Length: 212
Image 1 (cartoon, rainbow, N blue to C red):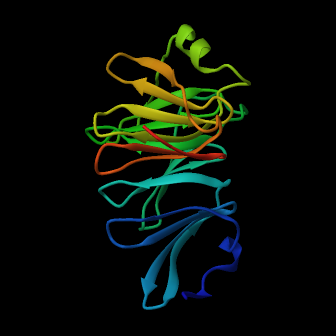
Image 2: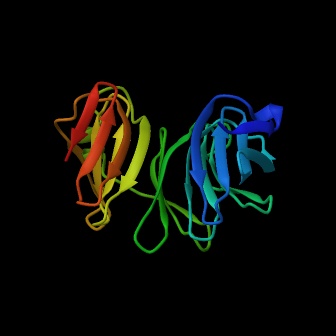
């Protein structure tokens, strides 16, 4: 068991995601913010914490920065206490959230957002570019409700797999700029996506596990 004697009480809430960076620091996202800890034996010591609106997902880059999708925007955190909000160009006052983050070949990021689709993030300049997908592709993929992303994963070939709520699994081909639905998932509510060492794609849903 790990003692949390030194954990800030403000951040002992519902944990939504965790990540370990290149330095071995533990990052914990919750419904009340982001906290980074140093593990010493069986104790966790808080290094920094940031109040944010619900951390939904996070990924660590090779520079030990943590990219986090929140209930409002995309952010980048550093273990030195720094934080930056990435401007996606979404108008102020318009509700969105970032539900999925992954790295493209070359180190740039792709993120999925509620209501605004997919964005490409330059990891050096931090500039965001909205990915314009044809209305025909969107119509083929979104048969129920609206586009509500739940997760995103980039495979070894550079294909982007997008999990949704109510609309199943989607595949985005960056080279062709094409988005297509993938049939056959156990359930249309996708929870997570991961690729194994053999190139198999594992998709967890609210009603079982699928393999592609």
